[in-house]
Length: 374
Ligand SMILES: C[S@@+](CC[C@H](N)C(=O)[O-])C[C@H]1O[C@@H](n2cnc3c(N)ncnc32)[C@H](O)[C@@H]1O
Image (cartoon, rainbow, N blue to C red):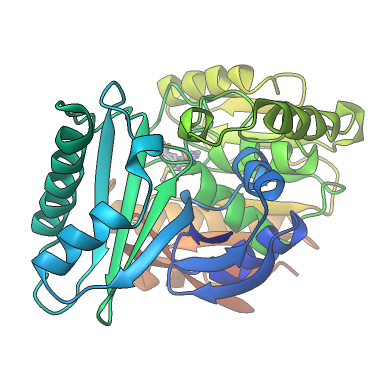
């Protein structure tokens, strides 16, 4: 089956490698996505184990589409709706892209909905309800270059929601982006990992769960469990395999976060507990300044405030200056990876980055910067 993984911008290559590692074939990075092919077992595995995608889309049909009438007819005929969408089931339609005659995604989504409910009325004399939050069938339509591709979204809601993060500090990273950033560092789970401005501890939790091979999708429901061709035995087999991959906790080195705001530090501890990592990740309340690092060398990962969502630039310059002094005095021989959304502020670190990787954090153009600390 052809499919598409929707990925954070900048993580297309890393996301493609992950798909390949989990058994997908013909993987091809696209913009903010990667195309792949998978059999049903692999599609289930991707839903349970992939850390980087926002969504996984399973292609169900494609047809030429240059007008609203072609869209209406194409939708009615591209899938056996009698089997796939009974009126007792709710659905939702998301549309991306445009094609001649269909320039507004909201309008195109309405057209798809009309085609579906009209088809249902023809078959059963009644129609499904729309459910935007937790639909039984999450449909995705992509329009481009005179063609429409209809897919099913197997998660229903975004895959970044792992279920461990009830509490979120200020400006938290999405879990899949944090997982991708950790993957880009090449951290192998053997050296200590420290986040000096840890917020809700997303980077630390994603690093620990990746190193322990804890599957991110084991504790959440998926829309695919309601698909007409859902195979419960195969799903259970993939779940059991995913669970069996977990490595022993004892293999992890020190994982440590500092958080200045005591309430956010408490939230971080709650999240760490909810992820089952309280024996492995330590959160210390207070500023990183004056703190002691564990014996290294190790890796520092950091997503300090950068002014767009929290903090003012003048105060933040002081914070970056202090961070630069802290790592130069405490972390000789370590690596620092810092997510920057503001080049003026990173200048205040007074350090020269050896790598700069562009990534988008919730629409903000950022750089994931690597520093080798002498
Ligand atoms: C952008 S947030 C980090 C978000 C985090 N990556 C997450 O996913 O939740 C930056 C955090 O740095 C904290 N912070 C600011 N100055 C600090 C300092 N001197 N020491 C420790 N933490 C600090 C803020 O309270 C805030 O929670």
